[in-house]
Image 1 (cartoon, one colour):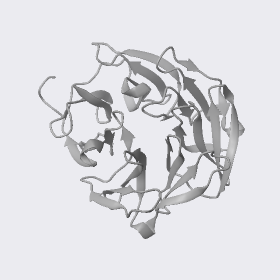
Image 2 (image 1 turned 135 degrees about the horizontal axis):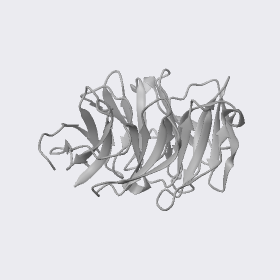
Image 3 (image 1 turned 120 degrees about the vertical axis):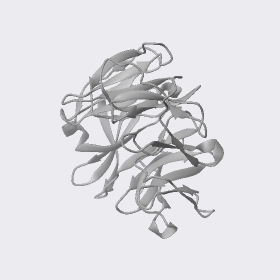
Image 4 (image 1 turned 90 degrees about the vertical axis):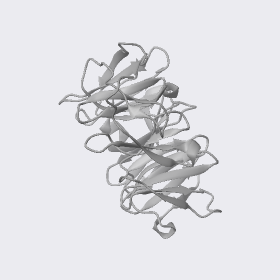
Length: 300
């Protein structure tokens, strides 16, 4: 059983997580026709978008992961990908070109939309998220101020400014199904929600320094209408009630968090990159208990 896939940055290869946390390990490298820089799960976890290394990185849709040689479909130049584990669309951003492209039908025959330049967005994308139901991408775009811009499959070349947020720095963002956009301001030690509809919905604080939050490195919706937030320094996680009726719950992490990505739907989340440090994951079915995932010398 494989419970997710990660890039081993020390060797630029893709590795599976074999087994479930508590007895899982990183398996042998999965053969790819390029060196991997990062990966994010899409299409219900059945496929990945993997970025290549190098001066001209590209994004690839990698699927048929259980086969001896997975299928790798070259999509477009990109050094950053905004996606979601249940989403069938993703947004590819090439900072070198200053271009974003929406890619859709990831569960079928992927199609790449037209190029959208930073000038059309109104600035540089700094964070992004995907609404898994509509397939729309939401971008935090920064120039002098920060704006929330949407790009949807029915008009993939026509960005629309949905909301102006003023001179704030958004460091990470995710879409909470039917609720709205969650976003973190790392320097301000704050996580907020922008309720749907994004253009007119209420903006409110989910957690802040006054609640004990510091250095939010990643955010994701959690079962039970809760939000899980991981911190860099101090290294711990926070489970917050967005209604603010219940006090937050904290737990220490064994490493400083760098991110928070679902590796399998609703269950396994990674909090760091695999390089000199071993992978650490959270198990949502075990109240977000943390586990080391060691490399294994034994074959699968």
